[in-house]
Image (cartoon, rainbow, N blue to C red; front, side, top):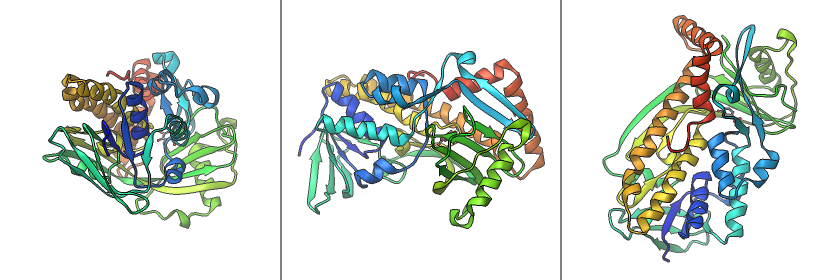
Length: 388
Ligand code: DHB
């Protein structure tokens, strides 16, 4: 089998890339180890930056988004007895949108299916070959157990941090930070108790009130690493959320409801460079992981493929300049988001050392009282322009 670009991984990075390439007349084949149902159902982040929404809209993926996404002007930051609103629109002229990754993924799957995109789901033994040549290839065993080979002009690894693509890049350099806490995430069938997200610093640990729709709320609690979600009763979860989010303070109350999903996610920062070797390019989680605070992961993947699609199109037409600059250009934004995610994480999660707690509270008072400090948070949260 022959195509122009083999994309390893059918998550949002891979599927959006195949969509962008198709719009430029470049053909791709996507391979994915999981099933379509698994990829479509996995619950991830829920916030899109203005620039991600603009891109999805420009490339014809914005119809349902325009109807269903909830535009938020900003966020609330709080600590015991105090809640402050940051208005990003007022501060930096950019908003954020509540639209789950599951919804983005569904729109992508529908659009690619309508266009006849070839996606091989449930493949195994994926291996990358000859990435330093102009005819790299990917071999795999398809869902029916048949060995297959796809030869292409370029390969893009959108296969996350455990996929084979990153490991295929020789002479990698990587940077990593693990955090001494995890997020316990729940979905609940209850209307959000807030109009915009609440990020709460609390001595018991961080809590976040997010949402997915008018009827579905999403919450996160800081928990120790290794926490088993089954060991928390529903009442314990709601009690912890109520305490940390300030139920009863200034007339605010948290409305509990049936919990429909629960999971614990570890938190890690990781950047692997370069993002390109020969004819292999990396995008999204294959190249970098951010902790979830600030919801940058999906937006960063969108920004990577927005850079990569024109670079690949030009490369296949004989102009390698954008492809040669891809890794360096993409990494500028990657490091900005890596810093911002680390900063939000370390500002909000309760640490062991009481000195750290005082610094966190001072920082929170500053970003909620100084317009300059608030604008810095807003600029990063609402998203820097794609070309940053
Ligand atoms: C969500 C996740 C985040 O990491 C965040 O900062 C905001 C919202 C979410 O899943 O809804």
